[in-house]
Image (tube, rainbow, N blue to C red; front, side):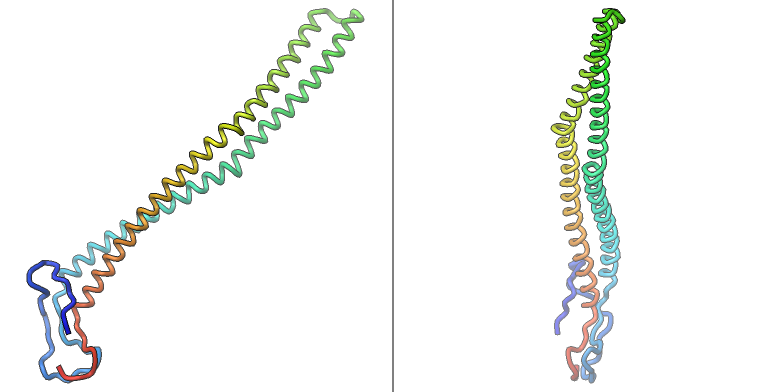
Length: 203
């Protein structure tokens, strides 16, 4: 039977605080020897704090990733659809306005030919129709710009945030595992401070 406790203080091994007498009859699992575990317990307490901090950082990183993923879904499934419908509604309204203004211009020109309206009224209606057509072209251009540039640009930004959050989560996951492994090792060392009989017999 050998001592498996690490010499943390580098002072020549672990201090024995109790040992069974030679010649004692023991059963498997009975305590044979106990080493001073106070230094190890102090290390374990400090390590527990490190694990708590690492777990908190991991939870924050996981939450940040979830927020980034949710933001992308909200943009793709919410804002993009809403904005597209807004543009489509404006385009439909502008098309209707253009048709109405075109019909009015036809009527105004017919009335001008009959002498019921002035040349200025015809020119005014033409100007209104051109303005309506300009507004329609502008809105269509905005929708096209939104689809070709804004959506890909914003989506790329959201995906970049997700990649950063994923990388951060991986770092925090590795850190948490490292700290948990160190704590488990400390606890195993504390357990090693008690040597038990491997089988029935005489010491």
